[in-house]
Length: 197
Image (cartoon, rainbow, N blue to C red):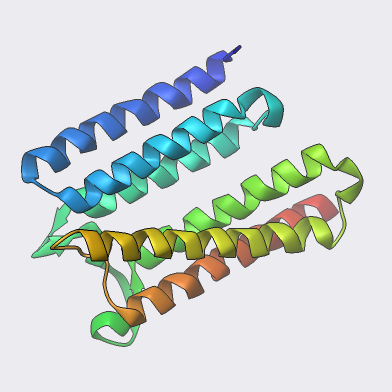
């Protein structure tokens, strides 16, 4: 498979932080995030496998890589008594598990916004006649929300299989789904506006 120079740059950047965080998680005995490292490796494999068929633009590859970095940092960087995922970026409202706006929620919105962008790219690349249609915006948004639900299933499996996780409870899951949907809707709105201009 032919890999372009711009793609190697993203690959080596991603490989470096995944390896670094994997060592960090193993050293700390953090089994929950070893699960996430394995998930990251699977995603990297999927993207690599589709490189030539999908011809992902470089900004999209970098956006995916930065999402991975934000995710690894969320579980690996300590802030106060907890990890970065628990950090309150801006205390808009609520308390406890219902606190808004946490780093975790920002990463969910960003990540599933990037997912909607990726799905839009795949849809319009393989079905160019769909470009500019409501279908090309609706399906990526709904698909990103669906993949966000798959992420919550992965978190649930981690809760069932590992003794100590920082995943959170029912409210956390609900807020994650809301922020996934928010990110997806923002992404398709940006796509729609940029296509119009």
